[in-house]
Amino acid sequence: MPKLRGEAFWRETLRSAHYVVAPMVDQSELAWRLLSRRHGAQLCYTPMLHAQVFLRDANYRRENLYDEACPEDRPLIVQFCANDPEVFVQAALLAQDYCDAIDLNLGCPQMIAKRGHYGAFLQEEWDLLQRMDIDKTVKYAQMLEKAGCQLLTVHGRTKEQKGPLAGVASWEHIQAVRKAVNIPVFANGNIQCLSDVQECIRKTGVHGVMSAEGNLHNPALFEGRNPLVWEMAEEYLEIVRKYPCPLSYVRAHLFKLWHHTLQVYQQLREELAKVKTLDGIVDVNRELKLRCQEEIANQKEGEKPKEGLPFFHWICQPYIRPGPKERCRENGESEIEKGARGKRALEEEEDGNSELLSKNKQKKKLRNPNKIFDPSLKPKYAKCDQCGNPKGTKCVFNMCRGCCKKRAFKEVADCPGHGLLFKTKYEKSLSWQHSQRGIQTPEISQRGDAEVGETAVLKEAGDSTG
Image (cartoon, rainbow, N blue to C red; front, side, top):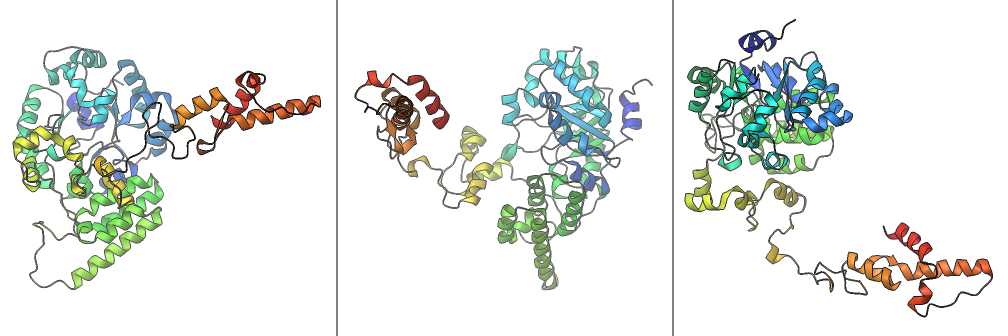
């Protein structure tokens, strides 16, 4: 049977899908895809998979795709990040029986994509893109079409627009791409509710609309509904029992789903962060439900949502990220200062305000409220006499462990502070040798004596100290 292409591929294989759940690392796993499909999603993507790892690691293939095969989870597109044409093709061949299409990520703007040389950073190397997709052209979207691409998703942002600098996606650029190619186009960006989906299709002429953050905050987005947060959580947790996934995925989903409610019930936020089991998360959701129901029961007639929200916090609704200008004003900075500092500088602020810390540091702060990130406030350590690294507090040579080990070995000496016992082990070795000969063990007087049993000592020292 000949392979379907273009419009026919979208109509037949993808069933004319208009409502699409985006590929999201650690967030578009099977359980979440099934929840989204129950509530209006017509097409889902897997999380971004690393083509090279997928090719070489059978466990990675099984955990991320093969074990998740489910008749309800179709149509499904598998997304890969890759920077080698042959690796990409071989990974796609291994995945093709478990999905309806293969997607190459050319849009990821994160630092990991830059280090790995894939995603949006491939856009800077058209020669490499051409080799990965076979053919060549002068315009980016048309090059991909001529190279064999049968569906193109346009995110409407540059790779610099991410996190607090995300800003608004450009539907004008999406529309321009749609007009320039003859293959189906999906749009992504600015999708928070069903009316956004409909307006995007009307303005850009795309075949379908993809949602990531909008879907995470309201998995019923494509139904045009705003359900109660605990109801969506209960349904998702039931699916997770049937199709398990790492607890970190579940926790991350509920942080998004409960975003507005957790601003009110900070204690539940802490409980969710610390809970270690799925049953524990179910208990936290039950407690959240009880508190919200009590709040609803005590609600005064005519009371309106607080904090400028369109709905009360216990209802699924979008989270609107502050734009760069708003965030600058919140932090008391001018746009020029903000531009000079950039996102990474913002994350490196060390004044103790958790809002200015990176997500990783905020997690560390949550685990240890006394954690200090400001280098000027951290305790000073004495330096190793040899290399300048922090020395061991109990080292007999006033050195770090690496330098201490070299010196202790050279001098056949002990350093109890670092657990290095070269002298002791050497003496035991000599004692054993002399006991075999019936000779009393002599004391070590000089380096020359120490060289007698050097091979045996080295083996024992290596075994004990690594």
